[in-house]
Length: 289
Image (cartoon, rainbow, N blue to C red; front, side):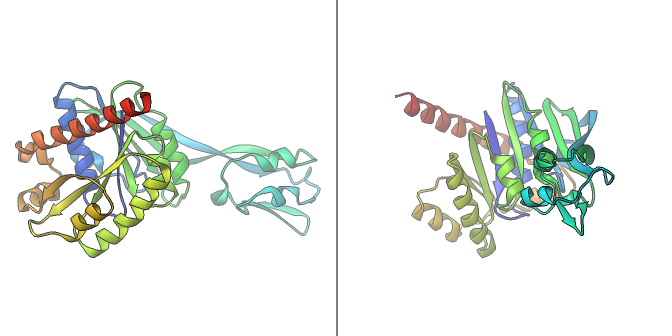
């Protein structure tokens, strides 16, 4: 089972939900893995405090041009949809940050002047944390190849067990890469006008991807109606609400888990997991029949 934790905006408590859910599942005796795919600013390690036992350098293929072979025909620039390679005054120029590693320029070059070289984009770190298998990506500062690095992180997902994918915030390409292939998505939001606006964007994205989902409201207040009313109107289940509790905020500020500081919450996160499992079992039965 792959459960992706996403949000329409940053700061909603996405990592709080993801890490506490992973630890609660592990305490049930199940095999669980936490993958931090927010590679531009991973912070799950602050709470899980993993022991990293393997680090891999991640690279992508980008073109390099042999100027002596290049005839300046411009075919490479015509095929590239991202202007990662262009021909100016008979000279081919490359822009590695724009390259999507499709290899098209190399295929169309009649002179065989274009070959591939490896460009370092970041790192993959693998370890363990209190019974939770841990993985995270770290994008190299100044690089923009976020989706390829996320893909590498996800390639290390367990074949068996439960995988918790901590997605980047927003609704752009990195988020879509992170949630793609998930069995279920939890959309974490906060009960504010900004939170609701970005939740609507995230809902549209997940519906377009046709992935089962539900909403978690973090820092919920007893008289909060705005987000709940939207979810009722859209027939979206609010599967879990975390109250606006000062004790949770204090624990978060020093990098502590909710389930460690307030153990009573563990049954709530276990209940969240069981609820998702039940929904997915029902979906599978419907597909079978």
